Amino acid sequence: MTEHAIPKDAIITVAGTVGVGKSTLTKELAKKLDFKTSLEKVVNNPYLDAFYKDFKRWSFHLQIFFLAERFKEQKYIYESGGGFVQDRSIYEDTGIFAQMHAEKGTMSKVDYKTYTSLFEAMVMTPYFPHPDVLIYLEGDLDAILARIQQRGREMELQADQSYWEEMYERYQNWIGGFNACPVVRINIEEYDLFDNPSSLDSIIEKISKTIERSS
Image (tube, rainbow, N blue to C red; front, side):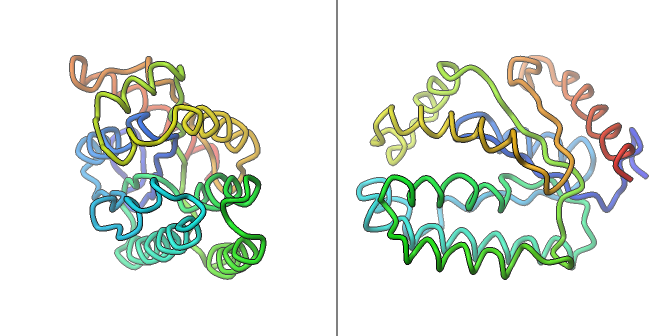
């Protein structure tokens, strides 16, 4: 067992809307627990730039790419014996992004059915390695939008603000019905990893208690 009674083979997934600080928390939490990281591969995504310019043309391609990459990563984490902190979950792809495009008409009904069928075949099985806990990062919308601006990724800055507002609302609705694994909800105002690194301790304590209760 690691400090705070978190098992050494635990799989911890960090979820939340774009700009909420998933990658930063993933890295710092892994460092503190002496875990490995599983980071979202944005740079190597061949569809992301085109997607932000034309949602309808590229939404299906993007979601299939993400699904394949996340499934391969989940398989690797499991075969490596766990001990990972993971940036973003496979569940968000279908529960938020693909569903949003289907409802808005930027993904065809046929493509959405194909996507969800593939997701269910991959994930909704008893042998798929679900995380031991999902950390859900949440915060004020204005603060999150400011972080997106500060980060300055051109492909994100090109998206209309209404896209981020809708994404924010969809995340709130999604987490309310999420039950694939235990959840720890953390407000981004509750910690400061740059000026107060010890604020990470309270997050670790919440993770530990959640895993203990579910074991």
